[in-house]
Image 1 (spheres, rainbow, N blue to C red):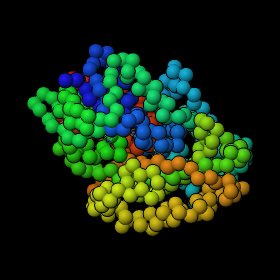
Image 2 (cartoon, rainbow, N blue to C red):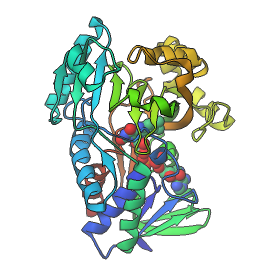
Image 3 (tube, protein in one colour):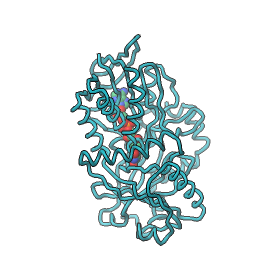
Image 4 (cartoon, rainbow, N blue to C red):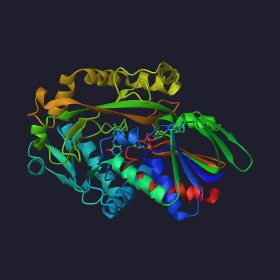
Length: 397
Ligand SMILES: Cc1cc2nc3c(=O)[nH]c(=O)nc-3n(C[C@H](O)[C@H](O)[C@H](O)COP(=O)(O)OP(=O)(O)OC[C@H]3O[C@@H](n4cnc5c(N)ncnc54)[C@H](O)[C@@H]3O)c2cc1C
């Protein structure tokens, strides 16, 4: 019997395990991960941006966890010698119609306490990003980049150093509750624990169903494909360049992101993935696809946004359409500048009324805490999410 079993060795599960072991050094804790390695899914398939907290509704969990989480992450990287770069970000309005939404974003950023934000005009934008055009922009100097896989590995090292166990190749298949404990059956043996924390990302809803928690919100996977900017053209971009997001969706729109290895990634778009861990356009898991399409929330979302969905699908197949959306920001980009790049799949919770759930969601049962929605910026916010979760788990011990 252990004190805590954490399901999922992504960046969130590892951060939670680390935080609990820091608070309770004698805790017997295991992390159960179905893959042979840690951080194999969202935590290693993302843009690598340390978000500053600009976008999120003031007072939301995302707003609180992102601003505090980014500051803690930067301090952590300093302590551990993990490289990161505060290269800043511009959010660019390319037409006067976008200015009211840009201003609203600026107000949100200020309400959230994002440090150093400034509105800039076209001339200053040119000084910051000489190849980017726009009528107005928000400059966020404290936005950064990091390799989140490296951060997750450092959290894992902290867990192991503090006596925690990380069991890879342990897929959780059944969970039964007893009066004072929970038995987690995995493909590699059973584990009995006093408290369970599920941080299962793309399978968060499945694990919730195993413990009898409500089946909704269901996870709907949205794949994001990237192009990589031809290396000789990487100097077109200095920092992160983002569009003004569409407030109806939690996705931030295709952006330009410098990477720690010197590449520049362009994307990600957002299309329905036909498999939860399907990183290729051709990857299909019929059971998972049927589950998504049968879900009432998905049908409502599809009815409301079928035009946007089709346009996004078209842009996924047409490099020209993808290029056109990037040329709004960097007009001198040409077709040959875009090389095929990687993909990631977002675990996005969808409510039964067809709304993409915007905020982080935690769900509680006696002795069990489920992270039901931890999309972007959960990597940035991981240390702060871990603090919030540990506050709730400690009384269960
Ligand atoms: C395309 C993309 C771009 C993004 N960009 C950014 C960004 O720039 N900045 C940012 O802050 N965030 C970004 N994010 C979001 C961020 O990557 C995620 O919010 C974060 O990685 C979530 O971490 P997690 O640990 O919850 O999930 P995951 O990393 O997906 O980990 C979940 C783990 O649970 C395991 N698991 C699932 N089921 C079981 C089971 N039955 N038994 C055992 N283990 C199981 C999985 O194998 C996996 O390892 C992005 C995400 C995507 C997809």
